[in-house]
Image (cartoon, rainbow, N blue to C red; front, side, top):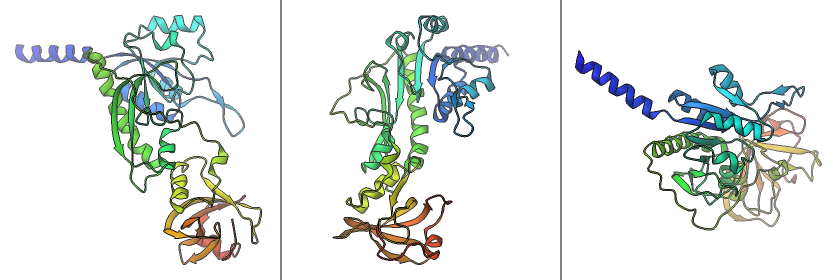
Amino acid sequence: MEKKDYRKKNKEKKKSRSVVKILFFGTASISKTYLEELYKNNHEIFIITVTDKPALRGQKLAPPAVKVYALENNIKFIQPEKFTSDVIEIIKTFNADAGVVVAYGKLIPKTVFNLPKHRTFNIHFSLLPKYRGAAPAQYALCNGETETGVTAFYIEEGLDTGNIIVQKKLDIAVKDNAETLFNKLVPLGINVMNKTLDLFRADSVNAVAQAGEPSFAPIFRKEAGLVNWHKSANEIYNQFRGLYLWPGIYSIVSKGKLAGKRIKFIDIELFEKTSENKDFGVLCSIEKNKGFTVSCSIGKILVTKVQPENKPVMSAWAFIQGGQLSINDKF
């Protein structure tokens, strides 16, 4: 009996040592996933998130996903518009061990990110210094990368320039798009976050400076989805993969019944990769029960699902059956 009690006490001590007081900066659904992991592991958490924003429909104020989770689980949080001296004093009272940033969406001043005992680190979906910025996974896909990863690095005043604490690699599959790649990066990022916190607990961090030429991944504008048919089929397919979640890819019909109309390509495939085409952006063939092909400067793509302007999403084959597009029409 005494032996069991001793083991129980030892286990309780070990559990108490594993708890970290975390200042969590996050906003979106992806941030909530990481917050759930920290909460599950019984860390003491104080959340900093953005203010409620107008939603698309009705422009009613909608809370960020992180705030919703905080309210559901009785976790303390604040939503500062600015990091005023009063806000900083509130944060100081938490006496954090570490700061964790996941898709917060705002700049954090030095006076705040240096407050925790072990400072503040960010989870970034690239192998820094490659793809610094807001859309690293999307740019990796658009550029046809075969490898990416997750980096935990110390927050500094520069854009994603801090020393690397933990970095793990991940292969990108040929058929990965933004959705499937995020599904792989999120759990890898959780692993990286937990590993970083383990290093903090053990007081054994050996952060290293970023090495190599940096590249950048600023947020995409909607216009980035416009297809340039002067590019190869492979490049256009990579554009589709990277912009799959938002904004998607589209083209304007320049010749045919639908001239002037926009068509969004919801799903495409590589149809042919190597032939050089003097005339591109042309509807080359209709593929039964599949859709239609379009010529690129090199190769062709097969369009299998579309969203015509002001209409719902439909299969490209069904759209072709309506007789609105024909062979030799041009985008």
